[in-house]
Structure formats: structure tokens, C-alpha cells
Length: 364
Image (cartoon, rainbow, N blue to C red; front, side, top):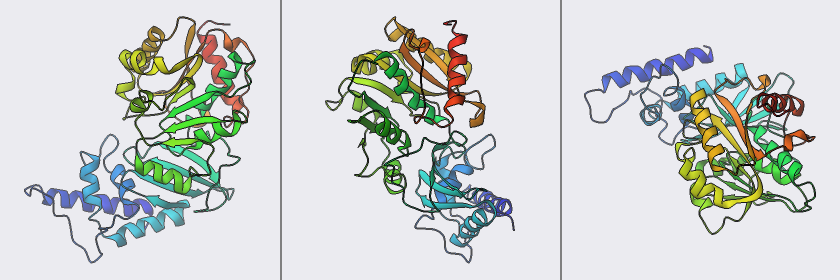
């Protein structure tokens, strides 16, 4: 039986039991000879995401799908997991309600490790290369996140942009990243910004923090600080000092979250924390109108000498036009020579997109 057949079997079983339980206050899902995964099989969160996400979801919400899939016989989920490994070379090495970590053996025998947020299983939050399946990862000399798996590594370009406008400054920039995820991005920044890195990664989800510490090297040996807090709370706390590079990689289905798209957020919370020559990078997901609205908010809020450019993901990333990276940078610095080496995967591809964005703004 193929993995697709097993997936369809699970979906069919869930649908049947959902229909049977309509009249009950709390669904009493099907019983099989297999033992229900009461202890939460590591596939449960990912499966719940698959069946509650997309254009035609099996369940109206992630919560309802989670409740259903945790009643599925563990043997059925074991079979699906085995098929994923034998046919696709994918091994789930970690899984909670909200987070999955998947190692994939590629055709060239390399291994890619991905962090997936289960409520949006179609998006890869972090992707790195590791030595083998379930191998520990120590990011002392990290490689940039793989562009062919996720374009979010492009946010690291904020540091080369900052350097262009601060070439005479010997100190390293103080960087704050909101939405740490698997922490591959703060690891890159800490490794390459200078001899005394000052990088703070903010992540509000404890399940994400656990996965990043267990499987992405974000433990006590990391060269950056990891704080469990919301971005808004951190920016307004006494812990926050003047920020040279602010990167926002947070989302609530849209990126950035609704709370970080408003003029009041940028005026009252973000702007007071920024240094004079800071650079801001933002992961943006939305339609053209939503992107235009955010760009206008940034232009109204930031000082007049700032440009706000929208950089598309290179074609190699394979993402839709709904995805872009915004950078707020002091005007004119892109007329200089910028070098993205060590900060991003396929730097020549990113340079092409930055050049195209800058030209579209009529600055050259």
C-alpha cells in the first residue's frame, strides 16, 4: 500500500467517525484493534495539520482534526510513517501538537532537516543540512538555510545592508529577531556579524523552543540569546536596548501578524527601540493590497531618509508571489557594493532580486 493510500485510509476513517459522532457533544471516534495513540504519536500534529489546512480540509479546525487523529490507532500511523520513510526517505524525528521536525534523505545522500509548524504544514519554517538521520546539530559554523527549501534565510541580508551604512563602525550590530523558529537565522547572524556577536532571538512558543534546542543546536552552546516571549512584550521590556538590525519573521497565518501591521505598532512599539541607522527586515505573506498597506505603514512611520523595498524570493525557492521580504534601509545605500556571501544560500540569486527591486523603485 502506498503512503497516499494510507493517508486516504486515515482521512476516510476520520470522516466516517466524524459523521457518526455529529449527534454527540464530544466525538467518540472509531475503535480498531490497534491501540489509540493516547500518548500522542509524533505524527499526530502533522496529520492534524494536513487534514485541517488547504482549500478542502477534512476538518473545520486544527483542534478538531487533532482531537480526531489522536484517537487513530497507533498501528495505522506507524504504517504511514514507515511508508514515508521507505518511499520518500522522510523520517519524523520529533513531533508535538504544534511542531514537527522531519529529516529527509536526498538523492545525493545528503540529509535535510526541516522544522514545520503543524497548523501550516505546507510551509517550511527552517531547513538545514545535517550529517545523517537524527544526527545532533552543532551550529558552530552553520550554513545558511537552504533556499530550495525556504526563502526565509534571505532575511539575513539585513546585516550586509547595515554594514553598507556603517562601514566605519568597528563594533558589531545589535540584532533582534522576532520569530526564532528553528534558530538557523540567529545562528548565521551570530557566526558572521563579528567577534562580539550581539544577537537576541525571540520565540513565544515553548514547543518550538524545545525543537530548536533538541534538533537545531539552539542550546547553551549557541552564540545568541534565546528569549521565550512575544515580540511585542520584548520590545516594550527593560531587556530591550537600541536595535541596529530588527528582523521580524513572525506570523499568524499572515506574516507579519495583524498586531505588527498597524501604524500604532511601528510608531509606539518598534520605532522607539531602533537606532539611528538601523535596518529592518520583515517576512511578508499576503496579497498585493496587503503588502502595499504594510509598505505604506512603514514609509509613513520610519524617518524620511528611509527606503522600503520589497524583495521577491528567487525562483529557486519555489514559493508564490504572496511571499516577499521587506527591507527598510537608509536611502541610497544600495548604490554601494553589497556582499551576501556566508549570510544566504545562493547569494547571486538574492543579489539579482535585490537589484531588480531597487531598479523598480527608480533609484538607479
